[in-house]
Image 1 (cartoon, one colour):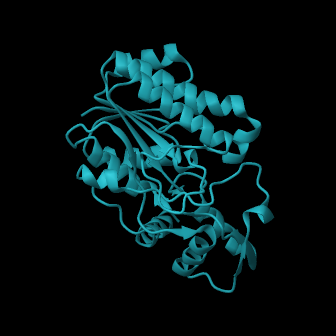
Image 2: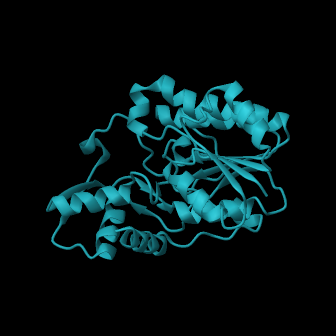
Amino acid sequence: MHILITGSNGMFGHALTAVLSKQHPLTGFDLPELDITNLSSVKAAISTCRPDVIINAAAYTDVDGCETNENQAFAANATGPRNLAVIANELNIPLVHISTDYVFDGISPIPYNVSDIPNPQSVYGKSKLSGEKHIRELCSRHYIIRTSWLYGLHGRNFVSTMLCLAREQDELGVVNDQTGSPTYTVDLAEAIAQLILIKPAYGTYHITNSGTCTWYEFTLEILRQAGISGVRVNPITTEEINRPAPRPRYSVLDNSKWHTIGGTPLRHYKEALADYLKSLTKED
C-alpha cells in the first residue's frame, strides 16, 4: 500500500513515517515542496504519486499564534484539508485527517463522544473544525481522527519543554484546571497503521492514550520518571497563566468507537511516557 503523508517533517509526520515505513512504501511532502493551501499543487502532487491512502498531518498547531494569525490558521487547517478532500474524492483515494480535542468547549463533565456537538472556543479549534467539515462534505472516503495533548520526537512539545525548564529552574508553575489525555505520537501512528488495514469503516474517531490527568499532574509524572528531583512544582489556574487562546478545561475523548471497529486500545499515558523518555535518552 503506497501512502502519501503531508506534513511529513512535523512531529507527528516523523512518527507516521517511522511506523508506516516498516510495512508500506511512503511519499512524504512538506513545505516548501507542497503547500496544501494551493489546490493546483495538491492536484499535481497526488496525481503524480497516485497513492492508495493520503494521511494529512499538516497543520498550523501554534494555539496562541492562531489567535493573532487567523488567516494563516484557516488556510492551513481548513483550506488545506478542503483541497486534499477535493482531490482525494476526485481520484477515489481514502483520506485520513488528524484533528483535535480543541473542537470541544471543555464544559462536559464526561469524556466527549464522536457524536457530541463541537463548540470550539479558540481560533485554532474553529479552524480545525472547519477543516473537518470540508472533509465530511467533499470526500466520501475519509477518516477524521481527533486526538489530544500530542508529544513526541522531532518537535516542540509539553514534555520536552518541562524537562528543559526543570533543568534550568528550581520552581515551576503548571496549570492544574485543564484535564486531558496525553498522547504519544508513536502510539497514535501505530493506531493509524491499524486503521488503514481494517475493513473500511469511514467516519470520525477519537484516539488517545488511556488515562487522564491535568498538566500539573502530567508534569509531576514527567519529572518522577525522568528522575529529576529538587524542583518545586506549583499548581496554578488557567487565569493565572493568562494565555491568548482559551483552552478547554476538560477535553478527555471517548475512544469507544475506535474499539468497536476492532481498534486496539492505546496503552496508559504513563507507560507511553516511559517509552518516550527512553527514546530521548537514545537520541542523546
